[in-house]
Image (cartoon, rainbow, N blue to C red):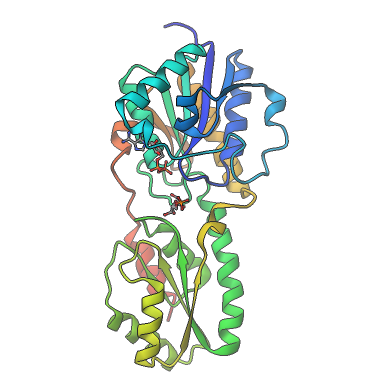
Length: 324
Ligand code: ADP
Ligand code: F6P
């Protein structure tokens, strides 16, 4: 097998806190093996445009504590086409890149698989706050987003208790309820609504009224953005039904994607970035680095893409019991 001489690294799709420490780990691990590193800016869009820059150890100084991604990120419709992929591969060849690390979510990993099928040596790293990626128990950014959500819930509970109100708190996560249910357990919510489990307005109203009757000073309802009931409509319905509490809505939105990566995310990002380069050096391609148990693993990208990590049913049960 030919020795790896120069690799590329990119961040793609929705950003997540911890992408910077991962880029740093990729750059420094590669350099420690005498492999050159080029940063591809703005994901697949930058690859097509040839926005590819050499990176040295000092280029990744002082970024371990920064949210976002210094390489920037993007979503590229063009890369989904055969022509876009062809242009991207042409640019990679022009820059002499013989291995690639893609840090991103399910969509970005699908793009990585498409490149691998066309002969590019590529290793994916799961970076997404949603924790919806198959084959890894945690993706980079989930822990930081969770802590952001918890800070918000803690603060909302103060005002909710003072006014004896119900709060509908919307979390991100696309079609996955992981953030909502984990935040519900750790934030002490009375109710969690996820895309995975369908409930009616009447069922929610009954739960809220029962919480009121149990003497609760507040009612925190965490609603995943992909849940079938939407916060604003639910608020109107609950207020019209008179469930004991008046309700307010807080949509957390993109604050969940920002902020300093937590210690957990910095460590995970560093381990995954390092493992990705080592996998390329070992001649692996078309795989994703995952966290399974305490260890780093490689999983074929074909097994990862198009599948969604499901939430642990025990978590839903736990959230329910803890809300008594
Ligand atoms: P994320 O990586 O956060 O899930 P997206 O789903 O938006 O974000 O995907 C990021 C980018 O990955 C897309 O804009 C596109 O360029 C690329 N991509 C997604 N799906 C595919 C696919 N099936 N084939 C090729 N490229 C894809
Ligand atoms: O995948 C990360 C995520 O933040 C999802 O939770 C959310 O549905 C989506 O991206 C939002 O995308 P955008 O940044 O394009 O608004």
